[in-house]
Length: 205
Length: 205
DNA sequence: ACCGTAGGGTCTACATCGTAGCAGGATGAC
DNA sequence: GTCATCCTGCTACGATGTAGACCCTACGGT
Image (tube, rainbow over all chains, first blue to last red):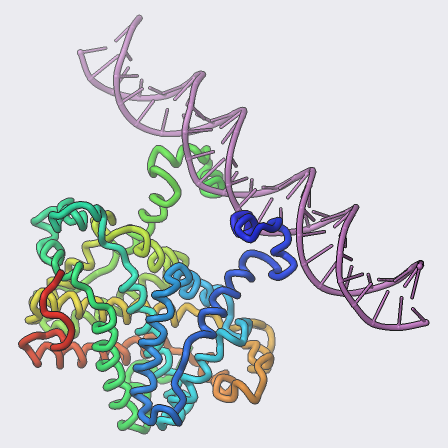
């Protein structure tokens, strides 16, 4: 607030003319971001898998431009009920549901599919934004990543990962994950009927 | 700090004998939680898919007992490089890598598979912990979930979801997602060879 | 020309927070 | 006895979010 105020050359209190409080302002940030998320329309991209795949890459590109909003993106929904979120933040959800319904999912199936899709997507983002580099100037891999600290006995596999950690290709990895997920969803769709796995307890608590 | 201090009947400053600062204390919390995560050993559960499935359910049960650490769990790694995390927080990672290597994944493939797995897992958790209920006392679904606020024209699909939102079964949904993911990983494993999609740059930097 | 109202800005003040600095007190080794 | 080690407490400082009041400017109606 104070920092933002001076950044704008205004009094910090001036901000409260535009947002009720700090949290509301942060909610606005997430809305601004989510509202930029483009979900291809069925008329532009006939295959629903392609639509979702494209949307996933678009989302990734978007949040990578604003990595600092990611913590907000994941923590705010934990305290703000869906019904109270700004409309701009719900638009992508609605559009994805539309894509899924159009693909043939029943309404419950569409919800499940959306959850799997979006969950996977932000899970990937969280993975991609994790830090590994400890000493950027260091040449030796183990030192650069701080992995030398780990006992060789207890962390043999982790210590071997150093080269792969640096060669991370987030886009390829997301695409690969999407392939898995979309194939899985398609299989569920073709299985029709229950659409939700016929295991577990039939009566919800 | 102050709150915690009074809760313990001690001076807030006494805490600083045990943790360098607030952040370190929060890191300790996540370590405490992650260290309770049980990854079944191959000797106990021969199928690697079953191991990962079991671990996923265990993780879910664990964090549902401590939902307030979830924000820490997802945001802390964004600022703490992997190499600096406490050992207890890295142990599950190491064990999962061991499971994957044992299943036949090469070291790069194991990393990719781990990322897909863990990303999917926390994505699910974030989904499951989202709030929807606005007015718990309200009987009418739309009002209860606050969905009445959404324009019918713009949010037809979302408004239809009310009944499904309340009948959420996180355990079944996680299990279903795991089925998709594990099948996908197995397919990658059997494809052998590159194990990672044959695109992108072959030479790591 | 006047006034009223609304929108936006600033100042001050307060409670709350994390934490540095120092001063004890308790315990056990020698 | 003396010392070192560990732990606790007090005080104080700076930073933060924000309530409350006051003020300035713009503008429409008359």
